[in-house]
Amino acid sequence: MATQSPETAAPQRRSKITPEREQEFYQAVLDLLQEGGYEALTIEAVAARTRASRSTLYRQWCTKPQLVVAALRSCKRPFALEGIDTGSLAGDLRAVAEAVGEAGEVCGGDTALVYALGHAALQNPDLLQALRAALIEHEVKTIQAMLRRGVERGEVAADNPALEFVPNQLIGAMRVRHLLEGRAADRAYLTRFLEASVFPALGLAP
Image 1 (cartoon, helix red, strand yellow):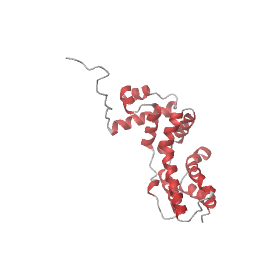
Image 2 (cartoon, one colour):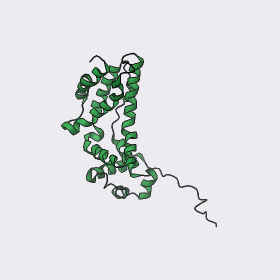
Image 3 (cartoon, one colour):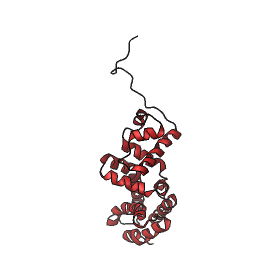
């Protein structure tokens, strides 16, 4: 019986894994990151921890950055910002503060993990791009949409120079308080931040 040559053989299918098995891989990634950091994490180590083959992991996630970001997304509590539309910009931003405060920090408050990955991303363009796409860009675009609605309603002047900086300010406040003060950015903190910094810059009543 003739055998197919490598050139004519059908392409290998991506294997299917169950959601439960996928979560085991993600948990192993997060555990290994906490134990040794990003640089020490390898596909081989994840395979050994989960008793899987390296080929299984490589078929699902082609690179280490892709696997790390997928693991982060699996444990990131959704902020559900896209559903926020209160009819006013101030109301939308207050709702963001409430949603973020209720959601808590990424991965149950383990901000050390997020900061460690952020440092590694500065040295790894692929990881930086993947982290931005998975964890930052969607939040930025959602807040930008709220600002556009505020401009369309006439609440903020279209040429207000503060508009450009609000997404970065708000997301920065969400992430950095734990690093500076050792406390999470809860609803009360983010509301004070809005009233003291963002609302005055936009010309909104507190």
